Length: 111
Image (cartoon, rainbow, N blue to C red; front, side, top):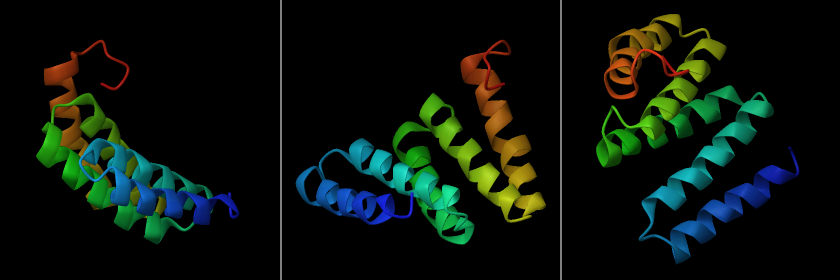
């Protein structure tokens, strides 16, 4: 993973340069970098990136979209890894679970 990070960061830069019209592609590339940072236990950096991705997903897709819910769950995991319990629980209880139940239904694995 350590060797992969510069490659993934370069991918984000190239994606922004050549596919800036596709914000979904840029967000996917940023999500991959955030996941790599988490694996490397660089949780503070991962948190910053996951916040950016989640905020853009909320704006673009809405809070009830499955990709937004998954992005929010990834963000909540980062909060918990950094022992930011209140932030993680608030996000889950106040935003993610209600949105998931409304849009995905009570039987979906995310709810």
